[in-house]
Image 1 (cartoon, rainbow, N blue to C red):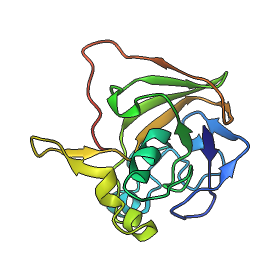
Image 2 (image 1 turned 180 degrees about the horizontal axis):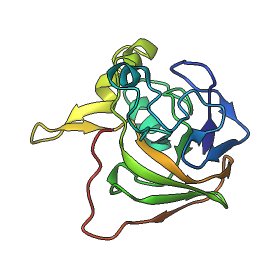
Image 3 (image 1 turned 120 degrees about the vertical axis):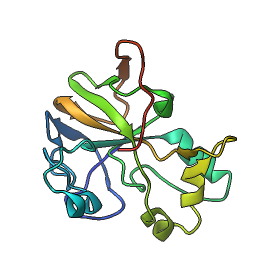
Image 4 (image 1 turned 90 degrees about the vertical axis):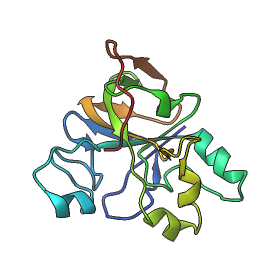
Length: 175
């Protein structure tokens, strides 16, 4: 649906006509691209850890869901690089390969762990993207993260195809 990147640390990312994914690094020119962690909180903990959050994907259906509660969120505004439609991202197992467009391949590493910046963007939104299920377990809805296995250019409207990993499937956990 949309692609976004930002060379500066900012919560939102402007939409682009295209983004280029670089194998092992992430989105070309994006502040979160790199072999090791780039998110400020993770750099503070251990800057040598591998970057499992090179690409952030969110499903448009989340924006539709929060709109029902009175929030207006557009692609790129929650800091994602790729906004999808029609794919249940949160149900994918760890290790799923997403082919974006003709060349790029992203391996799904886990769930985005949303932070308080979401409430700085729109007060009360964090409770809509993180909740609890009937058993009291935390449910994270703010998208998934991945690493770039094969580079390529990605544009809005490009098809996304899935290749599931071998079973048994490992459910997504926060990364």
